Each structure stands twice: as structure tokens, then as C-alpha cells.
Image 1 (cartoon, rainbow, N blue to C red):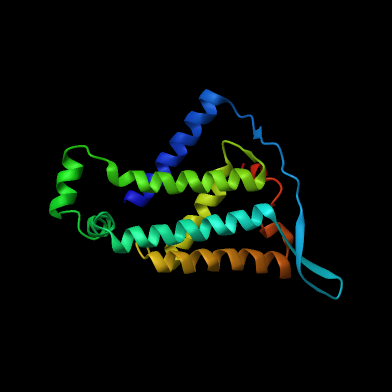
Image 2 (image 1 turned 180 degrees about the vertical axis):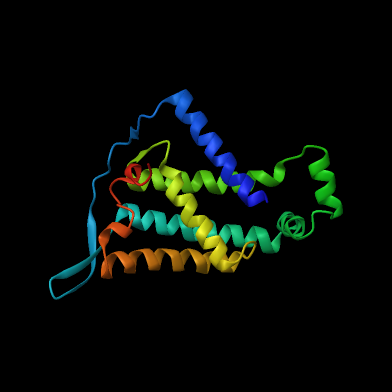
Length: 185
């Protein structure tokens, strides 16, 4: 039920931003794209640019930090206990008093993801999170709701399935890297 409610809340927030801020896109100044050839074979070259390297590095850093916090700190243990048993003593106390500190880490991770997407794609839009959210939802379902390692495996599975499907069948199945704003509506 909270998962479906969060999808509904995201739609409400998206429409609120659309009504108050307008439908316009905000484009960032594109950085100079210097690619480094990682491999070459039979006229095909595999490149990695600075943005891709930064996104992968930041993702790995956030992944390690999240894993550490969730498995090695009292805060993380309390988060996992709340997720498994809402009647737990600390969960009941924090939710009944209106304390929403348990939502801050998720918001920080969502903000970091939005920042990485905006810097990689070169802009922001009202609808840019729709496809990312649907892919994240699919990865969470595939990996198992509440399973940290499963969500990582589910994310890789969704990404590889999207890439291989676009490469072997039809390129329209992949979200265009240059324009995240045309992926919805």
C-alpha cells in the first residue's frame, strides 16, 4: 500500500510543479564531451566520457554508503526493523509523534539521483522522473521489495534488458540518452 501511495503522491507533486512552474524545460550548459576509447574491434569503438564516469563513480559511492548505513549503524537497523514490523517500539513512537526523520535518507538519495540524471542528460523537466521511477519500480519488484541486494540485481537486470533489447531488436525500446523529456506523454 505505501508503494502505490508513493506513486500517486509523485503524480500529484509532478502536476503541482507543472501548474506552478510551467511546462518549460531547464537546460544546463553542456560540458565538453571528451571520450576515452575503452575498446575497439571491427570498426566499433566503446567510449566512456567524463559524465558517464562520474555517474558510475557517484552511484558506487552512494551504494556503498547506503549499504554501510543500513547494515552497520543503529539508524539502519531501526530502518530495517520498521520496514519489517510497523508495531515495533521505535516505529510506533516515531510515526505517532509526527517524526519523519526516517524519510530524509530516501529523499537525499532521490535528490542525488535527480542531480546525476540532470547533469548526465543536460537538463531537467517536469516529466523527467517518470521513466526513471517506472524503471526503479520494476527493478524493486524484480529484486524483491525491501531487499537491498535484490534491488541492485533488479536494477542491473532492467538496464541490461533495455540495452540488449534496443541493440538486438529495435532501438525505439531504449530511452533516448539525449532527450529524457520526450520519454513521457
